[in-house]
Image (cartoon, rainbow, N blue to C red; front, side, top):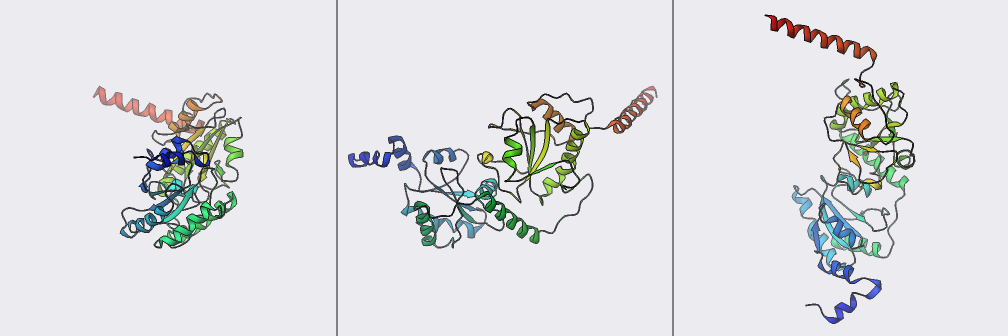
Amino acid sequence: VISSHSLLEAFDNDNSLEQWLLTKTVALVAEISPQNFGFYEKLRLPILILFINPERRTDNELVKPFSEAAKKFYGKISFVTADSRKYESKMKALGLFRGPHEPAIGVNVPDGKVLAPFTGDLRIWKEIFYYCNDIISNNVKILSPESLQHRAQDAALVTSKSNPSMKDIKGISESFDVATDMVTLLTIENFTSIALDDETQDVVVLFHETDSEKSRHLAPYYKRVALRFKELNIESVRIARYDLRNSPLPRRFESYDMAIPSLVILPAFSKFPPFRFFSDVFKVATVMQWIETHASVKIKLPELAHLNDEEKKLFKEQIKEREMHRMQKEEL
């Protein structure tokens, strides 16, 4: 039963009745999901997120002190837990990175700013309490894009020391090289100007991680895509990559629970969500055809666009030989 006093409370501080009802029905601590994240955003409250690996007992034990702090800020701050393996992109958007910063607490605020993550002891609820007090009092440092970049680079350095670099196997597992390949490297500093502000180009972006074996397997194909567009003199398409080991996820992609690596196209005339992600078999020909289909600036690729003239000649000779071999077998 809601008292008349409580109903009057609903209109204090310029809150709407809907906002008040939402606040009063939210759980003390809940596990975040794609289904309920929008609900929490509607509350227009800071969202304190405890990133843990649920399979680790020590991580699960951190929910108790987290919940104790939540009791003190019910209705002022939302408290949720998140599986760090599933929400790695969200961690990065908040300046946190798996490995060096795991488990961890970050805060999602309504105005879109990135606040410095919690640096205290996750096992002590009072330290979480003091951090929440600072959030309410606007005493938590706001991280600049440069600060986020430095945090990403520091995390990448720690990761690289614990994971020795892998050797390139040409055509199978390769690294990118800004000096030799035709793929534009995007960072948090240049992403907006190159990928979003330029309406003369369709920008294709591979979100990847430098030391990820999955990303390394895609690199030979993706570098070849960039090379072929260059050789075909198609200037309306820019092939780019964004290394999430060295830069946080761009804000425009925070609402997407992206797999890494992921390939997305930002059409010249449509730089806003919903974005179109590549979902076919990652081969040079299929990626090029996908770009041709979804580019705003219309292009017409030649037959066998993924091959240069010499390769086309060899390919056609192979087809001819196979056909002759097939016919000979049929005659026998």
